[in-house]
Image 1 (cartoon, helix red, strand yellow):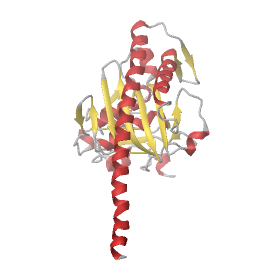
Image 2 (cartoon, one colour; image 1 turned 30 degrees about the vertical axis):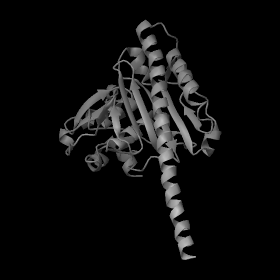
Image 3 (cartoon, rainbow, N blue to C red; image 1 turned 120 degrees about the horizontal axis):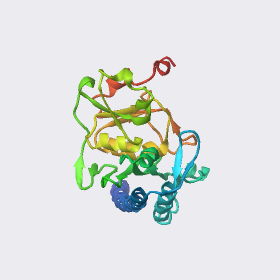
Image 4 (cartoon, rainbow, N blue to C red; image 1 turned 90 degrees about the vertical axis):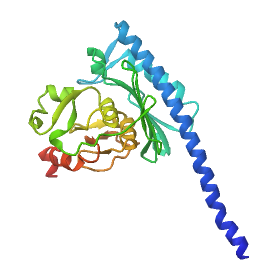
Length: 289
């Protein structure tokens, strides 16, 4: 009886190891397919970038959308939806559906993050694809098709720029830190208060800034402005796998696949700067709440 008991107790451990290995294999497949989708979308963006003459519409104040956004979204969807029919879907350019809220795993996509940079001819935009499991990013791909920079990460496997593993920086003091700032926010004068406190570097899209922080090409980035899940999800996976930290502007853990997809700002950094950034980044009105 005791021997039988030991055998029964041991069995779940073996099954658990097998399930974990299967899950890792699945994640490798998902990562490979996400990269393929990002490249396909990137080819579309690069083509429109070179040719010009694409249609430009608007989804609201200061929120343009182009023919390139929509075509890239279709390309990603055609590659990712069919192989994983049970996965939810959330994309900036697809009408949202509450069915995703019942899914453990959800693709979160921005087919062109940095549309304003794309229109202006600034090569700091990207394709952003993330896979979320129970609200947590487990895979992220951010691809700049003009610079041919493919940032990728999967849970427990590290972060890579193309084929090279990358890490966040080791900068410990804010005075020495290079913080990547929104071009729109700097143009509005919102970053003037930080000059002399840190090195401010205006840079393109949110997803691209997060990728650069993960790759050690900037020490941190933050914004007080609300951002959508598709702006952040892929970059969150990259930053965490590169050894960094990402929270909302109040320092709270980020959770994805929420009913309301707007998040209250963000702070992403190399972990060593997070405490100092929490002192300066939030607006005084936020601190008092």
